[in-house]
Image (cartoon, rainbow, N blue to C red; front, side):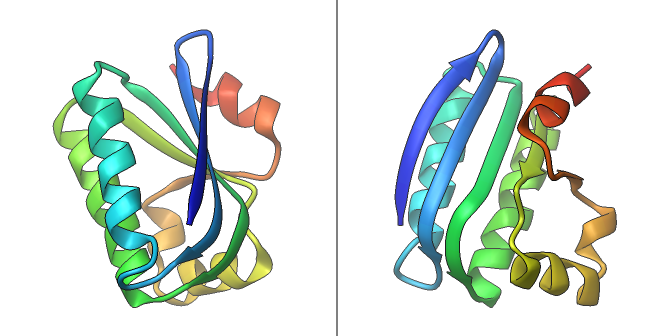
Length: 112
């Protein structure tokens, strides 16, 4: 998995590409979220447009990242989900846990 990090005002945007699977991207996802939280970022936007595959480990890491953010008083929002990832979140009913947007500008504006 590859990552690109940029900031739009006080929103940390993490654009991911590749796979979030066991051993391939799950640990990297955890590390980039942890580093952002430890650096004091409280508004984190995960751009998943470039994700080609995700497995249960990747989903689990997304949930763990969301929980870590919440526990630190931060927000974690998702944007640009592929149909496959959207379907997985629908089936697992995790779509109700995450704030999900299809438009980057709308996602950035959603932070309180």
